Length: 222
Picture 1 (tube, rainbow, N blue to C red):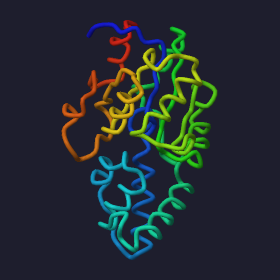
Picture 2: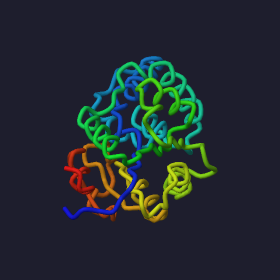
Picture 3: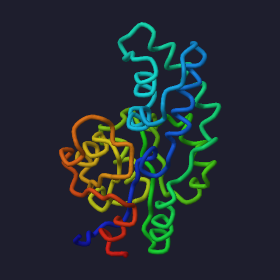
Picture 4: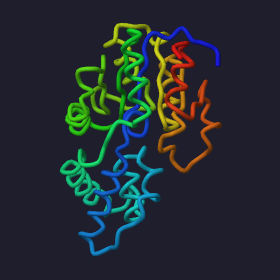
């Protein structure tokens, strides 16, 4: 891998920086139980975590946002998730040394997520990342969420760098689309949730990495 002139790294949250799927799947199965339905295997929920409540409710009840039941199910799911979102969620083990290396190398890093601040802020704080991240931009921090570039541009502003000096790492096609629109280098986190749509090779990212440590190779820090 060639080395890039990148000064800051921005990460998507769920599936890229942290493994939140166990709590999201747990909340979805709690909601199924409340409706008298048996639990579904964790494996069927994991790929859809990047789609948030829409994905979880879609898997759990086979309904989309246009269905009349969806708003009520979504709101109940979010209430349940809020109550348990810090039970099992952790920073990916292999990501921790990457964050430490970035900090040693004086490369600021930040978080840009479509997760609402109502969930993002307490979660980031509970994981001890709030004092380390140079920027935390939630899904409702700006008027637009990804794939719109606004959240990424806001993060670049907060770290004090031109977007072209930033790399965005994510596990959803919307992350790549937002990164391109913001003029950032885009990297797919191959260890993430990745969805069930087209293969990640078709997303158009400049780089695909399978392990977090490969990020340091890209930055010339390995």
